[in-house]
Amino acid sequence: MSTAPPYRVYLSDVSYFSGKLEGALRAKRIGYERVRITPDILLKEVLPNTGWMKVPALRRDDGLWLNDTTPLLRWLDAEHPARALIPADPYRAFLSTLVEDYCDEWQWRPAMFWRWAWPDNARYLGARLGAELSAGTPHPAWAMGLYFRKRQQRLFLRGDGVRAHNFDAIAALYPRALAWLEALLADRRYLLGDRPSLVDIAWFGPMFRHYAQDPRPAVLMAATAPRVWAWVTRLWNSGAEDWSESALGDFSDAAWTPMLADLGAAYLPYLQDNATALARGQTHFDGEYGGIAYPQLPAIRYRARCLATLRQHYLDLAPGTRARVDARLQGLGISERLHAAVLPPNAATIDSPLAGPPRQLGLAQRLRFYFTGTPWDSAP
Ligand SMILES: N[C@@H](CCC(=O)N[C@@H](CS)C(=O)NCC(=O)O)C(=O)O
Image (cartoon, rainbow, N blue to C red):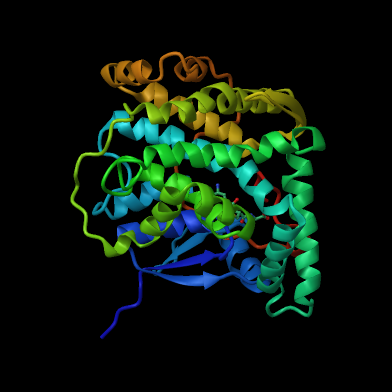
């Protein structure tokens, strides 16, 4: 007699964060039922129960709803300690947390760029999204595809600082990331050793559903980074592997340094400017990060919470662990920026994936969300 899996995952087959969560569930061998979203499912199940029209969302068989992969991965490791993804020791766990946040928030722009910046790739993805988001509606798939292609380009290219003057520089961020991972995978199967851990799941976000599966970046990955190409499928298949709780690497490999350097020199200054803009009540700000000038970036509340969370994790480290972290990150500007972080008053840390109580939404609000999605950074 078969038993139903304990979770339902509401997801999209093209989504960055859905791919990230599925990678984790598969690696941990946690059973789940895949529920591919339609507008009806988004509006009638995901939105009222999570407050967001975002995927992935997870529903446990007792009706508990969870979302946001960052706290969700921690929750899953606590609920299902076997095949833990978060390193057990606080030093490795902290550095992994930094990398996870960097992948989620700072690798997002180049991943959206490679998906939507060129017409060939954008048309293909628009067609896939159009089919997904027109299912069960009176709207033709082609029209929904066109609508979402334009929406994504407006929000995540033009609306996220992409212009003609920085086009090539943003395009170059993906091959650079491939080179980082290719170097790390030169003598290990996963980024920290013999088994998957949080940093693999973090990089799986951009690398799987976007770079390995969208036609244009997939060609580049296969041609220039075959080890990354193999690692993507290895991770997807990792549920089929038995692994021991063998020790994970300690980030001492110099191949980690360029990624951590970008985290300190580009991502954390961006997070601070974003927090400062919010504190001043600005909706947009300009900035130059990692040598790339970005005009009119949206001030994103969720990312002020990311900074608050990283800072808190850093401050919570025991003195001996913090000294080890500081020594590894010396010269990269990370510890200093976390120490000096200044936050807007309402920037709560991101601790819990538990959705609040179900909410009722009026027809007008549902119609608005149907056409526009929830705002990028805030729940209704
Ligand atoms: N921090 C969230 C982000 C989730 C997210 O942004 N999901 C995207 C898909 S990858 C989404 O649903 N976007 C909906 C929209 O743009 O309206 C997480 O880690 O789960």
